[in-house]
Length: 351
Length: 289
Image 1 (cartoon, rainbow over the protein chains, first blue to last red):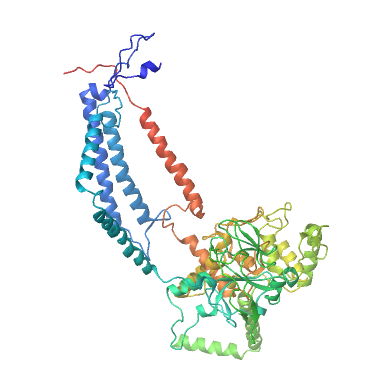
Image 2 (cartoon, rainbow over the protein chains, first blue to last red):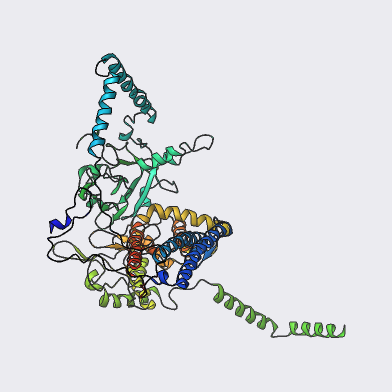
């Protein structure tokens, strides 16, 4: 059989004289109706043109619906869906689809469909071309004298090398180094814990057993003497992403670890809301087990036991916020978190 | 003038009649009674005292609930310390109305989840059970429509309530119940149920009492107005059109990706196969020019 595939150096099949069975070759070409019938050919031509025409209509309707349908406060709707999005999608899709269908129809019905055999040629250049190229290259090297003139060669290497320095120095503009920012949040001794969104402080007596509050530090909602917010814009976003805590009240007897007990108030515990795996916000708490689950990768933390990881890929226990009560009975922080919140990073002390 | 005069005369005659005072008194009493009946707040127990209700509720409780929750609602523990049914002291009428009213209790079988099903008890029986359990210890009572309805607010107040409710919902509820309330999976085979299309009363009661493994959102945690706003936001989701097209259950990238890969790419592959498989051929030979 290997003989059948061997070709001579002109890549044309050799004659298979020793073949036991004669090569039958390709079957005779059968024609399509459009090849033999002028009417069918015309019809196919019209079909292709109609497809392209429909595509044009769709494109125009796309533009029309872009300007006609209202978006914003008063959405136009069609069958419970936003009319603008539906119309834009349908018409742009139609415009593309009809071009595609037209091209396919054209290729299937009208373009030639004779079977062809084409043999593959080697990618390699001919031996003469290869020799000529090598000769030209070595002649160039010889004439430039790069081997004979080390001063020119070395100074060129130096110039190209130094050119890298501006690029490296420019990296400085990516921003100051983070320093110890990752290890600290805005929580301070005595800062009140307030409800997220509404910003109201939390009284111990407000919470029943089983309550879960999504909370933030008071400073996020604080205003200065002129009534302007203390933190604004991106600062708020950064602070929110690091300071968010969940406050959960359980039976004091349910608490297992000594540290959790010391940092709790009447069975109320506060933990960072940021998962220590890759930093998803977590508040899927089971009241019955006090297990806190991360929806991203199912890391599960035990809120009764210093936030210990009991399942999943998280590498560190969930940081607990040391908590106390102020004179008016509101929950406050005893201090900042005693360890960095959020996912691990390599400068972090191994635990 | 004569007509007017005559009627004026007759009126004044009646006024002076011996029965006039009595008739006025009767009319006044009748009107007061009618107005009171029309405007007085509806009584939860019509003609039945709380004690009667609770007594009837106890009868029902002993038959339907006591096996798991104990004969006095004190809860039953298994030998290894797990709960069969938790104590019902202090869970309040709201918890009963939610659990029994949505058919979650009595449970068909013990398991990770108490699914919503057709209620077993009638509304009257649920009220009796609620009265009995409420008598075991102080707890949240059944909310009324004023607690969870925004009907009484002006248009701008409603809009504000829905916006605030949305923020509270996205902060407190989406973790388990999904960003548009479609529900989600929880550990060990449980799930947070879908809360779209659930009656406002039951949503309010669920927040108030923390059914099964759900956390409480007591009035000290989310104020009654904040709970009302969350319900208003969920209601507004029902009315909002699907701006982006079909929601595919509102489950996010999983259902959307599945649809794109299976239906979208699948139909493209099918179309390509169909194109390659169909070509009509003619029996005729082309006459070469």
